[in-house]
Image (cartoon, rainbow, N blue to C red; front, side, top):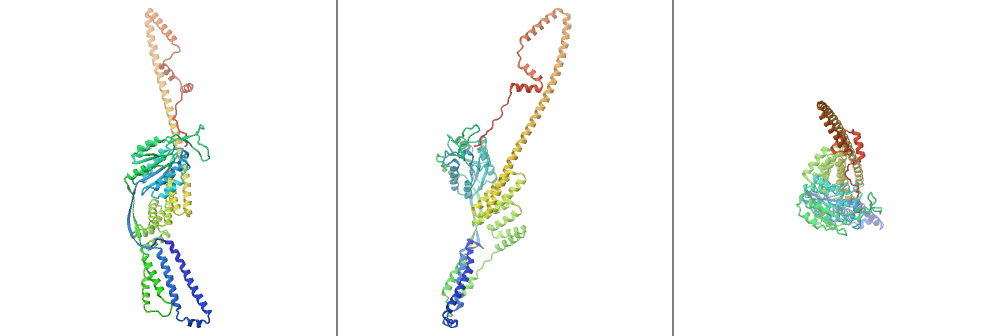
Length: 616
């Protein structure tokens, strides 16, 4: 048995009050009659009136009211399964939250106007899944792909310049984050709507766009701002300055946005001076994309049974009006009384409720396998009953099968009609995602843990939207956000340590290379000295042979002496001049420390790769 409007059932608690009211009325009536005289005398005067029939008429009226309230709650029993197929595309909206979006060349600011226009874009979507990515110096998934457009619009309300703690503008990181998310969960055509002023700080957005094109992602870039530029007014009223103290002039780079869109066969549009966007071109293109099946479900439509209770209401009212409170009545009226057992004999048997109830009892006894068996058996009768999906999700959550539990809760949320029940389903989804994040954090898988926490925060936001008075969802949201910040800081510290370790390893490697080069040069120098000694010995032998020959030929000796003198004079004439080869030979004979001293003296420096210090 299922009730479309359960709140009306609470009004049945007023039936005892009506009964007490009739008791008071009959008692008061009797007290008023006794004032006329002796009760025996009065009873003879009203002897034609039957107290039993008066009570019976009141009872029929009370029963009629009870059945009327019960029928107004719209009891439903039995179901008809109807397949519903939802087709569309997957769309991620990446919005720039850097400080440059605070520029006021578009009133009141670039970011405020962008959020307003994106809400209108989401409102026009029909059947497409949409997600939100925020980026500044890095990028985060603020809202995963969802069909809940209200959640996506509420997420936009929470976005500001502090949504991403890392300053700067990393368009390339936003594209890569969207591509990675599409790989995990995309089902249909993949579209990325990129809204920014296009002022990227060395994250290679064109390279990221080319990679996205290979993955089948189409990028529509939206430029907001002015190309002549505008100073960035900070929240304290001052203007953003760079490290040299100059006021930063933030300019829109429309050319870069056009190149990004062209690389993925997308389009580029520019916001007009008032900040409004002509989105018809984007809608038209998205409408022409091939729609894939995003969700195919069999929805259970319950059959209305209120008429079985409304019919007795009508008959009982007729019976109450025809029935007289006198002792005698016409013989035709009892015929209506024979209909009463038939009217009140209506009953419903519900084996689904029995199996579900037995499963709940097993769940309370911590017999989770037994409870799951009861719920699965009940699903044979009604495969898409939301209560069964919800209960199965609870069992799987207890057994720490979080992925399976999330799927069951999502199915329950899609089938529930009551906002309270939908909020309960999203609350449990958030719990499962939070516990998955804790598991991943213990395994040092920080990036995946951070993504799960983002999903948990989104689920709790949905729960808060469906049930605004539920403080547990708000508490869980704060807990997930706190852990998200801790893991994010830990991830940054880990990356910093890895960079330091990598730098140390690089320095050690360079030191080893220098030591090897030093040893190699010493060995080469040693070989060179040995070679010189051999050459010197050969030269001495040659000179000895010449002396012998010169002793035999005095004239030739004198001539050779003159030639040698002339060569020495030529060498003296070239003092102060040194060829490049002689300089290199001279440098090779120096010791290593003399080389470093010579380099220092000559002030030899190497150019380092320039970085960026832009944080807007």
